[in-house]
Image 1 (cartoon, helix red, strand yellow):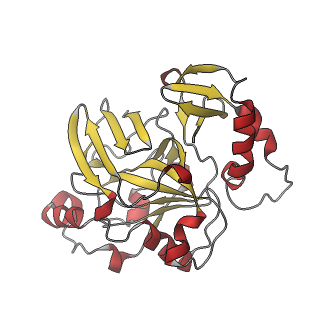
Image 2 (cartoon, rainbow, N blue to C red; image 1 turned 60 degrees about the vertical axis):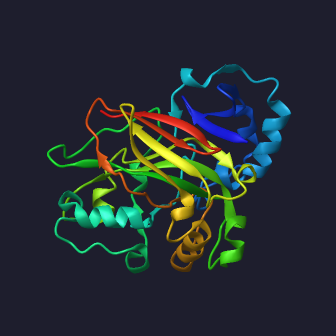
Length: 283
């Protein structure tokens, strides 16, 4: 199942290039008072919502998915978790590119651990990227994004995929500089998520997915998640040792070689096997 959030926070079911309005299924989310539980309510109740979607899909308004503004399918994550230097070919290019490393020694995720991006950076593909600090180089970084589906702590490697609600395409954009990466990656609109959540039952092996990004038609990054240093299970296991994971938390798994600058007016096309394609404009 492919579930999107669009326009004025409506819920859509994606079938091919068509979108079916299934917003009525959100009525299955239990009402809560203040303070609200940690996590995204839609993702936390995705199984119940899926029942409502199936029950109402034949009654929903149908339109082309290209006719709507796609927002981040996760509205309220408690955190966006990043995995730095998680492909060896990206480590190698960062070591060789002074505009990336700024004279620093580049290591791998084994030594860096994880980092957090500000939730305020989160947007959907239809909202686009607004570049900040344009006097510096701003880079695209395409990644597989794992969406956590239930509250979890100290998850065992073999059980890690059991806490996943689904997968999306992520853009972990960054402005280059000497500051900590959490600052440079947390500008408004620098965490693009979309175009929808593809539920976990659709993807047997998240560690064998081809993916690609083009900028103005030019292929910039192209790889497969089988080359991750820490695979999806390892990332969830590792993250859950430090953080309690909540429904809707977003784990961006890392980017391969080919990161490069983006400029206002650029058109990005991101594709991941099974999940699909998202298009993003740069302003």
